[in-house]
Amino acid sequence: MSDFDLLVLGSGPGGQRAAIAAAKLGRRVAIVDRRAMLGGVCINTGTIPSKTLREAVLYLTGLNQRELYGQSYRVKEDITVADLGMRTRHVIGREVDVIRSQLARNHVTVLTGTGRFLDPHTVGVSDGDGRELKVTADRIVIATGTRPARPDSVEFDDRTVIDSDGILRLERIPETMVVVGAGVIGIEYASMFAALGTKVTVVERRERMLEFCDLEIVEALKYHLRDLAVTFRFRESVASVERRRDGAITVLESGKRIPADTVMYSAGRHGMTDDLNLEAAGLTADARGRITVDGDYRTEVPHIYAVGDVIGFPSLAATSMEQGRLAAHHACGEPVSGLDELQPIGIYTVPEISFVGRTEDELTEAKVPFEVGVARYRELARGQIIGDSYGMLKLLVSPEDRSLLGVHVFGTGATELVHIGQTVMGCGGTVDYLVNAVFNYPTLAESYKVAALDAMNKMRHIARLSQ
Image 1 (cartoon, rainbow, N blue to C red):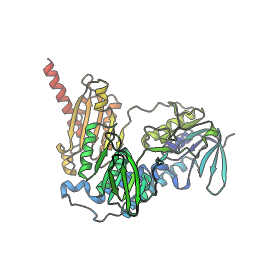
Image 2 (spheres, one colour):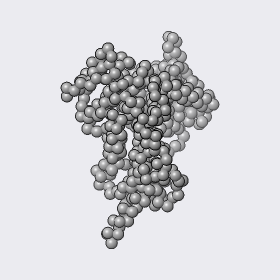
Image 3 (cartoon, rainbow, N blue to C red):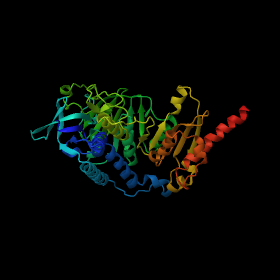
Image 4 (cartoon, one colour):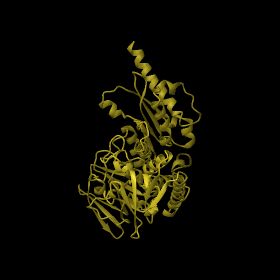
């Protein structure tokens, strides 16, 4: 008999949920992770630290209060890395305690160390001191996550030239910074450091940033980042980074030279599969370390599953959690419904962005007619109270059946607000529901009613002209 019914490699969001779901189904479960990495990259170096850092930045800089108290308003004049790190360490510590407690409550065995396949059903767990424990399992879930990708042409020193993990180890807040790559992580950190007063230059080889987002929302974000003295260099590639005693010079292929205290590369992420010895299990990974799975998160070896960032898009903590739960149910032979197609995207820039459903560009390309309803925070009493005059909520409505096709939010609380639209869409609701619903006043949620009325009035105008 195997040691465990299910063995999970990695304790991030996907691994945790897989382990706990299987334990709830009465299976013998173990989870493997390194000593200092319980909770995975999400808790220790990724999602939680970066979002906590953002919260600390917004609070200490007083950025959100400046419309009310003036542009010179600050809670703390000289913000240090120690100020930011204190809050981050506190939150990480609490989150690790919560995860440890959840695993213990559900009788999940925690095996501390690094796991590697010895054969398709056996994993060796190395403790780092030369000892290896061999464990067998009927089913295995790979949830090892990713690490920042590092181009071979760049010399990283974790001080001047860093990746996103290096942000948490900075000794001081840089006065100038170059961010290479305008993806989600790059833009999140660019906006945070710009809020701290760092002069940031973003270099991106594509024509625009966040291509999967609504164009109007991205333009609004770009305007705000420029207001925070961020410089954008689109359609530019980095030729080399020359390290100097007091910083680095980023040389672009166009010949431009950009001096900065710190250069942060945000060049995507690489699956942490190098040390898993996948060949022993009969598995392979692609060039970016990712593992291919089917719709049930099963790999090409039927009893081995993979979930989370290690399988690629969408690489979000929220979706990884669901993938882990679903994979565990399939592995245990328990019936379960699939992942809902309506998944919200949240981008924790300053200000934040969130959306669910389709964008205007996608609908236009698919020749799907839509009407737009917009609510601006400055029109809401709550927007005035909190000092957010730039936020907006946009509804894309089908004129044929009045269903919601997309919800896009920019500004304070965007990642929370989007769930109202997600729920209406998921339950098959229409714009009529939002028009007739009563929202607390004064709230930002009221923006749904304002935007719904805007869309309704436009559709009514067309109907009147068409008679």
